[in-house]
Every structure is written in C-alpha cells, then in structure tokens.
Length: 206
Image 1: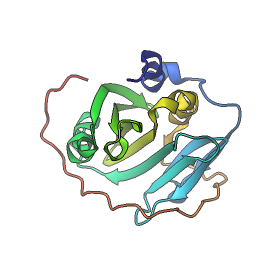
Image 2: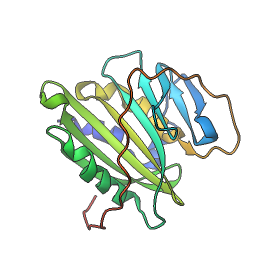
Image 3: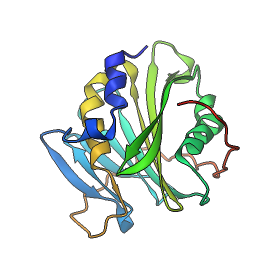
C-alpha cells in the first residue's frame, strides 16, 4: 500500500502545488496548441498512434516505467469531472487485474474544477509488479482533458515532485505558440479509446 506521505504528494491542493517543480524543465506545446506543460529533464514526448488529440510523456532516465498521457476529448455540456472519473473506473480501470481504488478527490487543475482518482493494480495479475495510477479529469466548456499517470508503485515516490510540477504547469488551449519540443516515434501502437459515454450521476463521496 502506498504511504500516506506519497498520497499527500499526488493529491496536493492547487495552493500546495504552487511553486513545486524541478530545476530543469522545458515548456512544451502540443500540436494544434491543445495544451502546454513543462517537461522535467528526462521526460520525452511521444505521439499516440491513431489519436491526434493525445500526447504521451515517458521518463527515459529512471526505472519504474513512468508515463503520463494527456488527452483532449469532447464531452456533453452537462458533463462533470466526477462523472468522468466514475466513467473511467467503470469502463476501463476496473478491468485491470486486482484493481483497487485508493482515493477519489475533487481538486483544481489550470484554475478549473477537476476530479482525481488514485488506484493500484497488479501488472498482468502478478502481485510482485504492482502499478500505481492516477487519472485527473478537467472540463472547459465542452472540452475535457484527461491526465493519466502510471508507474511501478515502489518507485512512485521519486516521481511525485516532477509529476506535481507538471500538473501545476498544465494549461489547456495555449493562446500563443512557443517552442514545440521534438517527438519520439512511438515504440508500440496504442489501442483505440472506447467511445465516451456519460454515466448516470451517482452520489459517491470523494
């Protein structure tokens, strides 16, 4: 089970995130100016096959197989971040082997209301390879952004500071272009995303 201190890192409030970052970061603007985010040293952006609205960031310097996928998609005007979290759990996350929700919480991202879920699962059902995941949803008008982080759970602590720095720097729909970082060629094709389906609202406390 992840330590309480680590949960505090991953579930920091917007005020707690201010000023958190890493000494060496590079501003990155996604194609089409979908979003901007500061990339810490050692993280590499990749295009996502068959999804032009998604960018995957991988840490190529350390172990733990850490990855962050940022994806934009359209939602109904009545959608709310909590509903997107519930939809993600129902439609995808709950299918992971030995999936267990650790915490759900209302937060803020880029100055907007957002919702987060932190969970663990066993990679290919093997308890010796536990994975930690966090997925955040934020909605701006009828556009939603998903920030999905995953890594080897025992090594999650070393990524907490960098991850929170990336969260704090995230800005959707950049107004003016800046230097766009280079892309690496995807090392494997991604599976298509399931069609979005708005779940029935449920009163589940976060």
